[in-house]
Length: 445
Image (cartoon, rainbow, N blue to C red; front, side, top):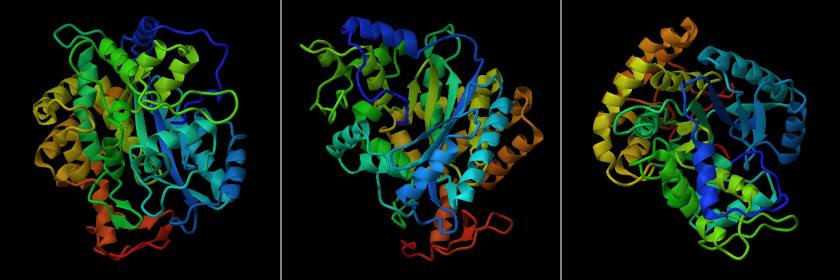
């Protein structure tokens, strides 16, 4: 949602539906050996000493202005609810990515700390209702559009945060799946990643019934915008058709509010009396939110933000290993293939497999078994990818604490809410440096 797009149209040169399909096929999938990776980290922002309280907008504006002067290698953007996002530059290796983003995060946290502001890694704000921080024509239009389908859109815009792993699309491969093998793996493995890293079981201080409330929001939203395209056939063709048939969120304007059409597909727009231009296509692509979004590379969008300053490193390391190490990728492919029957014909994230992952986490036996195999394969692959002993230990700790026990980070939050102790030796219930117990009642608001 924080793609750096312009706030109005450029000089117009209309595109036809055939031109759009050709452009989408060419720009969204770039094949070849995996050479680079990246990560996009979203964080909830709060008062450092009282992390259940949001930061007043005027203080947040001043703090974000100070961040703009930092010499970061990552791109820094702000989400509609004030969440902070750091998007790494493409990195040639896992460790290059981790080191660069870790350094940027240290600088960002130090700057925000001077203003009494902290960052937290939850997939969904456990305490506060949606409050929009950014008031711009595109976000006004987005809110208007999403409100038509229900309240989930506002919560997604303002209350959610994620770890998004970006990987190259990979080789054209022989066999019936061809280039779609890596694409297919992402959609099946995605459910395992949802379950293993679920970390958003609370909203407004109460349990929601989901381990990943964030993922439940995506499943409940407009499937033409948040759903995946069909997995059969050439991914380029199916994605191009998906883009063309997806509803247009808004039509940009040089001045005044942006128009929000009612049920107009991009294909219908190209055939209208006032067809879109290339800038309209680029913006339309940025308003599609499937769990795996092709942008020249594959953007895996299903992982909740993680607890702790460095919790994001584990999903980045595990996901990279399962895609970029050939042996681990083959193991993951075999592990998740049986899960495809549970998915059925519905697209992610609305199919039964993904719904179970968001609701049950790794308490689902099949997802737990698949996660066990995949995490083991990833751990074995990390030395081959040059991961340091510290990163390997972090993955091992996550496996022992969660995967091996059929648990996910959301289960810790639920235990804290119930006022029950976590197993000896595990982390205490600290949020932003302050001990906050839930005690089975509403959190301070």
